[in-house]
Image (cartoon, rainbow, N blue to C red; front, side, top):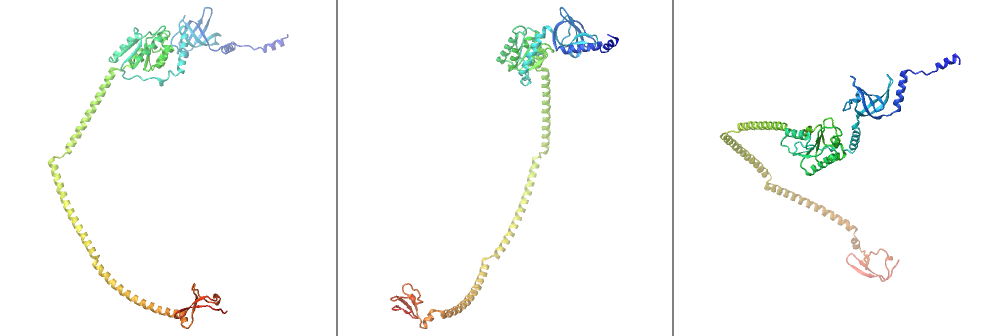
Length: 452
């Protein structure tokens, strides 16, 4: 191989820098592994001012560098220590600046409680989906309960704190203690049975479910499903006061109210006697003020009415004066009415005189005489006219009358059977009888022969 080929091969080499190498190795590592769970022992733990945690996780044969940044570790409720066994969820990565393989942790829990925590989360999710945490199902706590039931250990510190708080806040409030075991095997069932017993006995109108603080394992009886369902099905309001403020159990989520401590639960269900006394005093002062104000207003109204009320003698004088005025007005009104009626009578009398029947009858008689005279004259004139017309009509009628013709020697011939006028010899036949009417009289003749 000559020098030219050697130089060409050298120019074609892909030479990595350390930064590029670490970056690509980091990419390969992070892309090859999903989120993983690891259980190991903490060592070399350090927490600088930045708030990030740096430590190693190791087992019997190996160890690996780890980092948990501040925005993740601030969510934890404990601080890891060297030698502590933990369970972590993490990404696989590479710290490029030093080329060190490391694990970036997102979540951490104590290894001893890891299984319990997972069971807790699974049950919480299950019951949440069933609606057992629904606020609409929560029952109201009575503002002034008649009796409080406490379900807890009879020997624990919780019952002492609750009784002390109830006596301090409202000593008159009756308390019934339902003793149960609050941890250990069978504790959840015992608590559930006691809840049902308290419900069946109907002695209390609110229940406190309480116990003192402890580890997750100590509080596990309150994380079991049997107890959660007993709380959900109970018709009496239940206030949970389990552990300390940072402790949360399934019972807290199902209960109608969750108090951070047993003492807080007792305060939640009991009225404060001093507050009630103060409220009563305020109400008393308010009622007293209202009554006084009402009395003052009534007294003012009475004084005002007393001033408006006149003396009886003065009242009688006023009445007598009004009677006199009324009498005068009545007399004047009667006089005016009489004069008015007299004027009306006079007008009616004059009107009656004008319409007197005597005068009217005289006028009618005069009119009758006049009409009779006119009627007589008209009738006489009319009769004369009609007589002349009749004479003229009679003269005209006589001129055309058949009787006049008969008077000149003529006759009228009719058939004897039907008085039908004979105008032609064709209407006759021999042997037929005919009636002959003359100017004076009639006679019957028989047709002997007919001549055309």
